[in-house]
Image 1: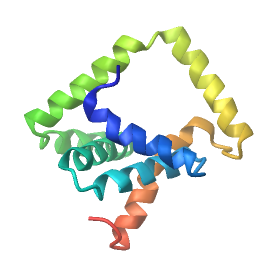
Image 2: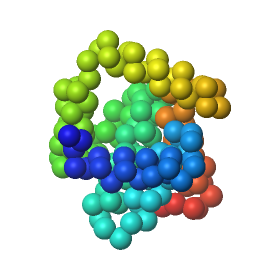
Image 3: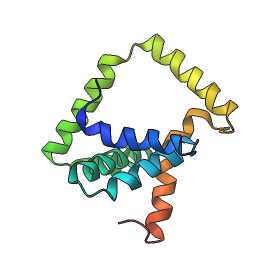
Length: 138
């Protein structure tokens, strides 16, 4: 059901969990690393697309004007993929079910030594920026 462009990143994220990386930010970052270092361009694109989404969400919260300015630089193909992803989640998300899922997932994460709960998903931005500053990723 998931859009094709989401599959490489989501699969890499879940494999990171299976390999013992429990926190969502770590699994997201490892998913990005796995995709961005893959030999196939489609995997690379998926990883960078999702990292762009996470970084964009963080930027939006901190500097909406800069986010909007940078968003204008996205290609039509990227915009179309973002639209497909957004429509997928809009179609498959029911407000009440989503609220229950978020609360359950938040409680699960907190019970598993992730005190920030679902907020840890967005902490991948911090990991990316630190790695970038150290020259570990391009």
